[in-house]
Amino acid sequence: MSNFKGSLGMIDADPYQSGGYLAYGSTNVFWRQIQNFIIDTTAVAPSSSITGIHWPTGQATSIENVVFQMSSASGTQHVGIFIESAVLATLATWCLMAAYTEATGATSNSRCGI
Image: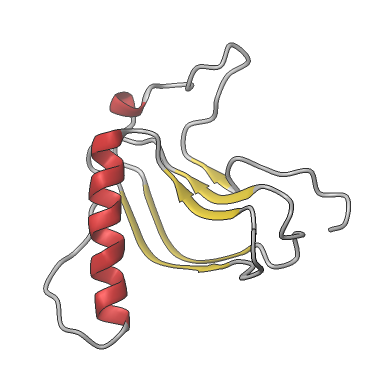
């Protein structure tokens, strides 16, 4: 993919419109779910900006069993999930930490509904 120019989201839950606004606004997006995906950006140059999921969504949405395979090069421009809303970003951070804790062998009863 040597000619790849970058992307806000391989999966874009609420694309930006030409005027710079989200299509629906993050608080107007409900009942969306992503599960059972492997999002692999390793074929994209580390210097190219790419995001796996653009997820500015509201209530009753979830991301479950999604694996991000990204460049680990120093200075990489790859991002797994981009969430604009401060409230949602806080929840996403908490949920990602819970998932990391589970993946590393610690026990946790948390389920993420972002």
